[in-house]
Image (cartoon, rainbow, N blue to C red; front, side, top):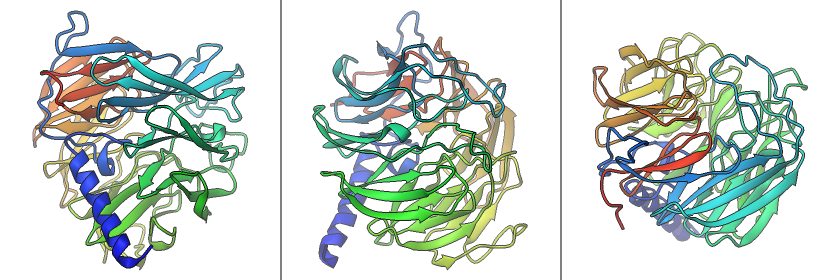
Length: 446
């Protein structure tokens, strides 16, 4: 690709992200994994029994913790339909335990009509006994699919990476091998795959972490042929890579158990790295106000903010609070599973056990800390001055965005909620254990 073509492609990527922010929600946490969509007029309250502010409800077969994605009038999501209904443990009751599921599973991708929830198409990607086990809290369909409006790509870890066109035509499938990340140093520990694919220009990029031979790879979107591959000598993590464009430079931010790194998404060449050694990282990195923000790790480690545009090794001493590229770090106590949310100059993070911490985005200073009253796996999202925080037990807590803790509503979904909600065209999509709900206060935008 010539320099001029690359510049145009980067511009198109940036414009697509900006244009999608208020409309389409094409990947985990929406454009650039930021979790924000203003101008939606979403309700703070709804009621399932009376269907107040509930546009539609659709039963979803099987179990999946993956989030829905939306493009135009179509919603896509993945699921795993097992011959025996799997048990899912809430909170921290499961510890480091592995599920003992051995029954055959059908891994599927579904397409729904965003206007009424009717199933447009459903495709089976693979069927058989799982090649890798899962954590007792996880599912066999954790990774969120991704689309560019023409192609939809879903990762099922050990069951492969599969692409379809938006009308359900199978395009290609890639075997990623056995993807079995688990407790570091214990090859018998298998907690399931969760990292979601991302699309950049004509490439789909996946992070494949496991006990041995981890890698980062890009595949051509139309053919599935490998474009580049980078071996990863890292402790396995469950985070999704994030793409962002700044100053005309496209960058892929990838979390690892030893380092957080920035890559050229076209070639896989490493641009920078920052040492952050920890076990069991799950939150996805994202960029806000020129800062690369990331968190995660066992026992609630700090949140970090690195200034965008780094080059080379920008690591600092383990106790340093700032550096040439380190803008700030918080005290320990960050999220274990969920991805933080930057919204209107504040950073919202929620710990699994139900502790909400709100920080100043620019400085990392704590603004307030409160308890939510439930446990969490889903990440917060925001729209029009409201922050939506889903709890595992089925509550969607709606907070007023700001420097004080104010609960606007607690909405009972009637089932457990592990998936991060999606926002598109005046609709909040909430996936529960067995259903997908479309929540909206007004007629859906065209």
